[in-house]
Amino acid sequence: MATAGAMGVMCFTLLLTSCQSDHEDLQGKVFTFPVQSSTSYVKVTPDVAKDFSTFTVCLRFFSDVRRPQSVLSLAALSHINGYGLYTPSTDSYGIDVCDATVFFWGLPVQLNEWVSLCGTWDSGTGLAQLWVNDKPSSRKVLSAGKVISGKVSIILGQEQDTLGGGFDFDQSFMGQLTDVHMWDSVLSPCEIRQYLSKSTFSPGNVINWRRMDYTKHGTVFVEKKEPDMCSYFK
Image (cartoon, rainbow, N blue to C red):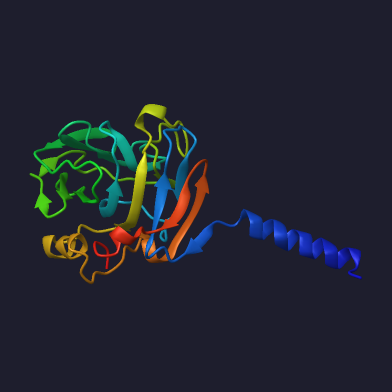
C-alpha cells in the first residue's frame, strides 16, 4: 500500500500531467472546427519568446463558409491585433498587423477545396504580402517601424479582442486547418513556393506543425487526413 506521502506525490504528478498542453507531431492530421462558436479554439504555445518585427505564417484551410473567418490570431501586450489572418468574405483576404488592417484582392477564393495560404510582414519597410496557392498578392504597406512586443498569445480558429480572449462568434472559423507554421523572418519567394507546392521545406521556428505545443478548447477535433487528402498532402 502506498504511503500518504507517496500518494501525495502521485496526485501532484497527475495534476501536473493533466495541466500540460499536448506536444506532438501533427503530420498527417488536421484540426476540425465543425461548429460556429465563440468558445472553440486551439491555443498554441510558440517555441520562442521574443519581440517580432518580421515573420511569415503559412497554413492550409478547408471551409465552405463565405464570410470573414479568423484562421490565426496573434495578440500581444503591445498590440492586441498583433497579427490576424482571415479567409475571404467575398473575393478579398484581410490581415491585421499592429492594430492596422489591409485587404488583398484578386486572389483565389475556393469553397470546399484545400487552400494554401501564406502571409509575410517586415516592420523595416512595412511591406506585407499574401500568397494563395501559387499566386502572390501585390505588396502593401502597413505598420512600418512597429514591433510586436511583450507577452504573446496565438490562437487558431478565433480572433482575439483581448489577450487570449474576447472572441467573436461571427468571426470564428468553421472547417479544417493543417500544416500551420510560423517563422520569425520573411521567407523568400522560393521558400514560400516550396511550402505551397508541398516540397521539402524548413519547418517554422515559432510554430512547427511537426512539433506542436497546443491545447484544444470547446468543440475541436484532431483527425487523420481523409483518404482523398493523401494525394494532395505528401
